[in-house]
Length: 319
Length: 319
Image 1 (cartoon, each protein chain N blue to C red):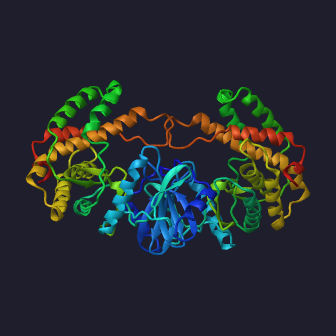
Image 2 (image 1 turned 135 degrees about the vertical axis):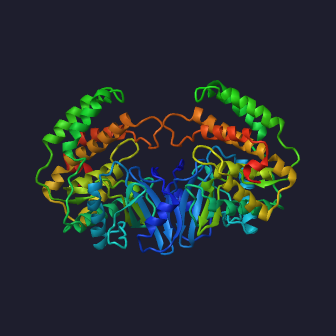
Image 3 (image 1 turned 90 degrees about the vertical axis):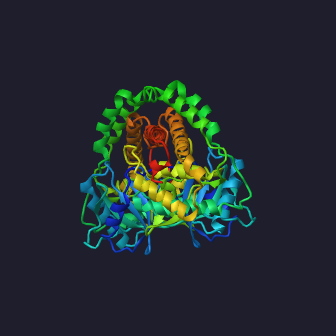
């Protein structure tokens, strides 16, 4: 639910005058996305999205995010195209925030992932990885393995208030995951947050991949691990192996995985589950009363972690 | 910020099959409105709004709200037209809630009311009152004078926690307002909640009047009092008499007020301010921690009430 910054009529009019996208006909806040303020913007030339970047997004990262979207779109990926203003820049200031206009993408994000979504998702993720080649900029993963220890330390004093023994479990799992973290897998531009609400479908096909504000340069197969966690678990955090197999097969139909990538799948899944468990736990313990953001239950990912630590190899995911 | 009910893909598809509005191309939650869940719905035939009615809206009132919108739209008012499904009904069920599709209206609601908005607003309100004539249904005002005493009683035990003496002030003001409440003014269909976020402007003209879910059959001039409170006060709750004069003149250019209506303006403004002060106070004292709804400061309306009790006649509003 995200409109944190209100835009005055005068500021909006002045802002739109910077662009060559026709005349404003409608402007409505969008309830989706939690990091930034998003507005649906309609002009005589069509539909657009206006995003105001809030404090969690670092200003110096914006050229990477917007540049990556432009690069991917230029290579045929269905992601939002940042619109350049008359001055050639795709980033401007509005209501005291950095702001960008992107093209509108059709489609509906799946409220409940189904088997039929998994193969197209895997294919799209592999195409995204190939399309990212040649993009000149890099961005370290701010929520990669090096961040998990410090995050856990901040959560430890209160972790057991959520679940007895949680802190100790996490310490053990984190040490094990870091000790086995793969060092030599192929890297590239990854989305790093490709949850169902960031993937639009239309007529059974993917029509949009959005929200590149966690994108970074990291292990490609880690992106698969994020998707396996986000798309292929049943309500009680049991892996649906038919779904994970479909996702992995879809991916490999475009970009076959190396033996090293396949072997690393369990530890990558553990790492991805830790990343979301830790950020959700941190938010859970630190979201102020009355905040407008829905806190997501960290324990969904605790149960996934238990699963990922119970498996002995990639075969458990249907490979 | 309002998406309380998530709609599954299957339920949405089945729901849209009831209508003859083309094929779904996009579906996004809207961050505006606080009572219901609203989605922007795009089909091959255009833009629509899908509303799911949440618990604050009584099911038995929906035919009145939807019927009134259809009636007003048929008389040229720029309000949403409820779309009838193939079975002829404009109300269906979706995700366990009553739901309706309405047409999309262009425009932008003013984040900060300006003098230039006030005359068009007054004209539109008067046209709405005239257009409401002939609508066969009636609905009592659930938040009219008879509701204020019970609301205040529920708030009294905690009222002074917000401001010392607030409870006593409200008791005195309520008794005075009820004692002077006009009994013989013209009544009709009123909007009863025409705040800036319910009025869209495009090129300086009103392009949309939305959110008829407080509409009811009550004193027409009470609707003016709601607008004076909502549009014509400066940041520190001082009346901007230039704005209120413009609003009243705009109204009278379409529907001249009787002497009795003019004389009643101060008490109607007191009542309207009490109504919003009391519901905001109740919400303030009863909004659970972590709720997704922004609580509005009741004291904005306390300051307006002080003003309305300081005036001796309608001249204070620029008449």
